Amino acid sequence: MSELREAPRLRFRRVMAAPPARLFALWTQPESIKKWFGGPEVEVATVVLDLRLGGAYSIAVRGEEGDSVIFGRFLAVDPPVRLVYTWTLEGEMGATPETTVTVEFRKLGAGTELLLEHGPFPVPQIRSLHERGWVECFDALERILAAVETPGP
Amino acid sequence: MVERLAPRLNDTFAALSHPTRRSLLERLATGEATVTELAAPYSISLAAVSKHLQVLEQAGLVKRRVEGRVHHLSLRARPMQEATRWLVQYRRFWKLSLDALAALAAEREP
Image 1: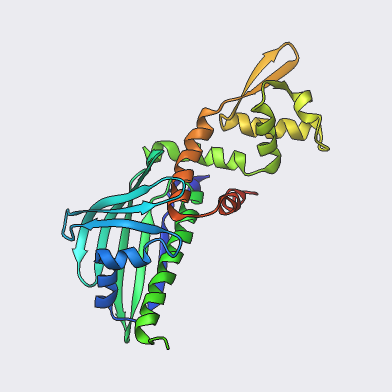
Image 2 (image 1 turned 180 degrees about the vertical axis):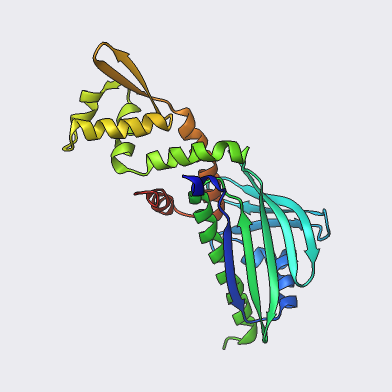
């Protein structure tokens, strides 16, 4: 039971085929965020972002079962290496507990080692939901990078 | 808030992780019932049903009223609402299907 009482966190490591500066830009520019955030199923309506220490951001998402907003505040902004921000989801059923996202872009050869930590989540099931969600995000980012590297016919 | 609610939420999800317990809750959603009435549709023993009911009771999902030797059980809806509210909110946000949610609930299966 004791390990369940420790609020669980998610940790990811992905290697991306682009330099850290490119990843940092994709992660922080509103127009880019709209393309990858949440993966192919999630429709991002608006992104407002004040990229500085203490600055606020919000990402509004349209859904068939109601709209929702992810919002928070930047706790660390260290381009192109590191970003820390709070993360709260608010929808028609109210707000969820605040979590924190830490993302790092470390140079790895010609690419980037992306490290992401997100939590704490109140129960493992909620962590698992986010795990699926972030994988969709990473896959979408990879598709964007692949499309740039090799132009289609 | 998270720290305070987390253990209770875990109890709730653990209680909901078993198909028999979910089915017992569904039955109780229609009204109060005795242990014998609840056990009737199942092929498992009365003792096994009793054990599932104890888990539900400990998670605060079910309450027990004892009248002589007869135990009446009824549903307490509130902890379940609390537990599912966040989960539903997150699922909607990530656009995950209800099937995905059911699979997550099943992860707690011992």
